[in-house]
Amino acid sequence: MSKRGGLAQVIQHHWREAVPDDRLAHLIKDASRGLGRALQMRLAEHGVSFGHWTFLRILWNGDGIAQRALSDLAGVMEPTTFSAVKAMEKLGYVERRQKPGDRKQVFIHLTPLGQSLKDKLVPLAEEVNAIAIDGLDEREIATMRKALLAMIDNLARDEEQAAGDNRRIPSTREVAGRLSGAQLSRK
Amino acid sequence: MSKRGGLAQVIQHHWREAVPDDRLAHLIKDASRGLGRALQMRLAEHGVSFGHWTFLRILWNGDGIAQRALSDLAGVMEPTTFSAVKAMEKLGYVERRQKPGDRKQVFIHLTPLGQSLKDKLVPLAEEVNAIAIDGLDEREIATMRKALLAMIDNLARDEEQAAGDNRRIPSTREVAGRLSGAQLSRK
DNA sequence: GCCATATACTTAGATGGCTAAGCATATTTG
DNA sequence: CAAATATGCTTAGCCATCTAAGTATATGGC
Image 1 (cartoon, chains in turn cyan, orange, yellow, brown):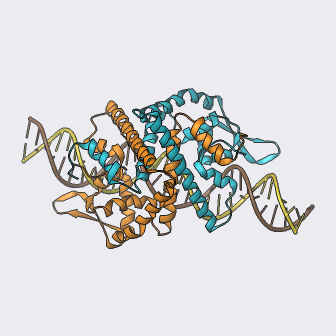
Image 2 (spheres, helix red, strand yellow; image 1 turned 180 degrees about the vertical axis):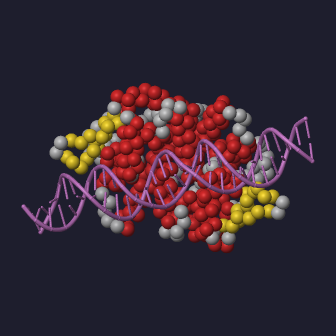
Image 3 (cartoon, chains in turn orange, yellow, brown, red; image 1 turned 30 degrees about the vertical axis):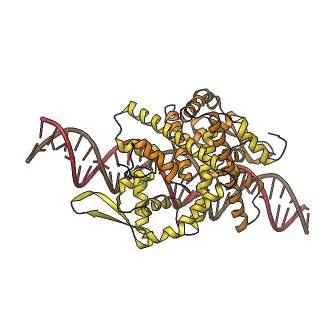
């Protein structure tokens, strides 16, 4: 309050110095929301919702996976996937199929329409990324990436432990899925 | 699929190398959700919802501000603030008052109960922060902070421009509020 | 001083995420 | 093999957030 030197400077000072501790979380949240909004705006122009993007991205990288696996890769809970997939099925982006001899799992397949979105949408995400990191150098980005990864890992271990404390041994699926949200299928 | 060398290593490899571009956004989102869940778990033990925390934090730092100002400081839209404040009023954390001669603005004041939460809840956020940044050194955190700040700024400018393209000159309030979501009251 | 515009709050309704709980089907094990 | 347990999908319902649109009140320009 009542610092000298213009708005930008005040904000810079505020975030960098006046705010030592827990507000790193706020910075991260704000960045995340900024990125989300930027992509959302662009996707909306193509009639695709932000929520669907998450799942399409994974399916473009290999469809025909079970709904459960899709949840893990997306880093969200099953009900989230369930409703998104249902909605995308209605939009004609995906099909839900079962394999003979397995009446539990539902496998998600892209339709040609769903497949075709890739070429339109991927550049939008790349554009957002380019805008966001403008002016940052390689080294800074690498450091940020490393730091974020470490934080995700730290928090996943905390969460894992908290869950274990209260209840039971969390399944591998749970722990791994919780770990970071979106990575390759392991095992 | 079918990588060698243990889960942690696979994930590390995945995030650090296999994923060059837009997935920085995913890292940030995952970190944000991890931080959110960690805090939420702890707040829940004290009967406070994550949403309320956002607003309480600001009010502890100076209550009696207008609902609109509270929105700006929290970096959320008015309806979000509206419902949160209504809920907190019902819980007895805050009161909504008006000033004579102004029938538009509603000023939000902490009750003693709302005030008293500060001592219980702030340490929880500090704990989460400490867990999250465990193992990171000063320099890394400073770099991340700087990079995030730059990204927020880049994205805010993008958004500002997109809005300007379509409609009208966004008010100062809007632009500044959008800039990062939670900072000091300036001017 | 009045009318146009801007501002502040509210309402309504959508979205994306979650937890809890249910049901059906596989899998394991005594 | 049968019973117990685990797994995968679904349903129901909550929470935090948003946009769009409505209402009431201030404010500024003519």
